[in-house]
Amino acid sequence: MEDKFFDQCGIFGIYSTEIDVAQAAYLGLYALQHRGQESAGIAVSDNNNFTFHKGMGLVQRVFNEDNLNNLKGTLAVGHVRYSTSGESRIENAQPVVVQYKKGNMAVAHNGNIVNAQEIKIKLEEEGSIFQSTVDSEVIVHLIARSKEPNIREALKEALKFVKGAYSLVLMTENEVIGVRDPSAFRPLCIGTIGNSYCIASESCALEQIGAQYIRPVEPNEMVVIDKNGLSSYPLDQPQKRSMCIFELIYLSRPDSIVFGKSVYLTRKEFGRILAKEHSVEADLVIPIPDSGIPAAIGYSEASKIPYDMGLLRNHYVGRTFIQPDSFFRSSKVRIKLSPVSEMIKGKRVVIVDDSIVRGTTSKEIVKMLKNAGAKEIHLLVSSPPINYPCFYGIDTPNREELIAAKYENNIQEIKKYLGADSVHYLSIDGLLSVMGKDSSDYCLACFNGKYPVPPTDFQNNVLQSKC
Ligand code: SF4
Image (cartoon, rainbow, N blue to C red; front, side, top):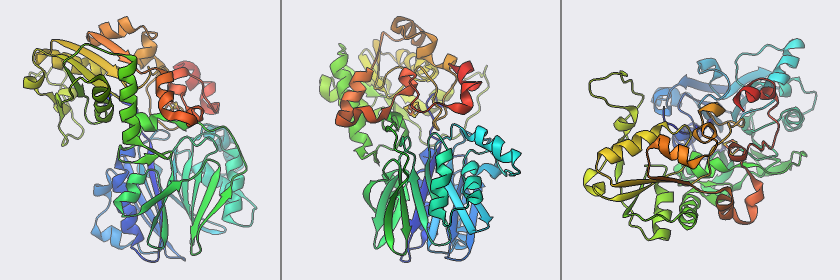
């Protein structure tokens, strides 16, 4: 596994009488594949009946011509999943599709509900039976139990009980509803194609189907797409915004617009600020591909140190198994990345990465570049030191495994462990300077431990043991 934070899920929804909605959802999920590779699913409504298909694995493995052709309708909701809550099994694949007293409903969720266990225990005591171990199912139960006359009011009521991170796409027989939690942790945006509307985690999914990006779903907003077009309703739970800054650092695709910002340009700017904060005497700037590329370009432009590709990524590697005492003394890092020796031999090299989590991959890369002949290695990181785990839908290791926390942010100790000649991180102030006037609207909990929403389920056990 790569030494990175892992995104959790990608979601997509569309209402259209003009195009094949199952195909649109399929293509949208393809574009969102980086947000989850464990399972994929699409549910479709023809205004009366629901059909759906879900499976384990990548989108290209789960769907084929036959099962896509069976999904006929004018509304669709799709989901790709990487498990952060609940185990990796087919029962946990989304969308969650249920039949209840008022009809059918399919729900796709991105984020993590921090009081899901608390709610689940109460509901089970009152007789509810859960089909899966995913946190999203509590929303479905709360909606099904509501006495409100329609789905919009029932959803609003359900969300009053739920705390944490949720971007949702919900489909009934005749409407697609998109919701973003009041803190707005996870992204969700709206696009238009022809006379139709669609919703997706990131704008790259809109681009993929030829839709035009319109705007983000606002925090605390419910948007409804139906035969009348697009309408918006407030959720009545105003709260300070805490958008996940890691979406802009690493998680989202660089060609996306997230939280209204170009991910690529934002990362490049992180690199420029990093160069202003830490100037290093060096001959060459190289990125850790692919995620470090925009920041490395920014660093090179601001520092005037030439940029080049000193490391190449093998894009055809899936999961690998390596014997620990293999004769070839290979490693997972060496299978994925290889140095361009002629480029780096005898040079003082700046390597730019977007983040360091455990430090295991960075250590291997430094060693690999030194073995390839680099004279000096300076590791520049375009985000601040990660000191705390995330409880809002990102897969992170325990606190004791985070290299910055383990060495209590002692840069000399971190440098020694990694084997680099110097190590420099972007400061929190530097990071926020790129966000401009919105700088107070972001969650920084994995850097500073200030959790904007108390992680209720974890406070008595996981949080204590992790932090
Ligand atoms: S803790 Fe970090 S990864 Fe989690 S939501 Fe906040 S900024 Fe994002």
